[in-house]
Amino acid sequence: MTNSRSGGPRWRAHCCATGSSPSPSWPPSTDTASLAASGSCWRPTQIGERLCRNGPLAVRKVKESVVRGLGMPMAQAFQEELRLATEVYASADAVEGPAAFAEKREPRFQGR
Image 1 (cartoon, rainbow, N blue to C red):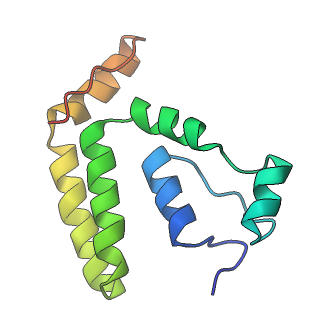
Image 2 (image 1 turned 60 degrees about the vertical axis):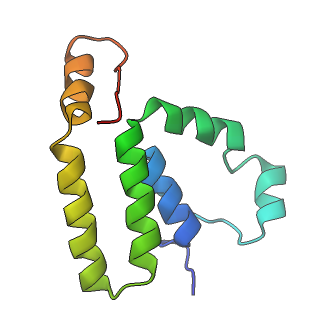
């Protein structure tokens, strides 16, 4: 069951992939049509633009972690997430992100 603090699997995947933080009041309603009409949710183009600014390797691994983790016991899912995160942290993209920030420029992620 989804409560206002946890959101659902889609919302958690959205937060992981975009780097968004869930607010304590999310979701104000479980009625998707009401959310869209109120402007309280992101448009698909906004989500796509946000994802494109993230490193492609990190986005792929987040998606992989969420999809794989849904079918696993929690302890096993955390171990899988740690394994995938270790791959991302050891990548060239993990070096590029902070370097770009320090140099005040847009990152040039390579997906490796």
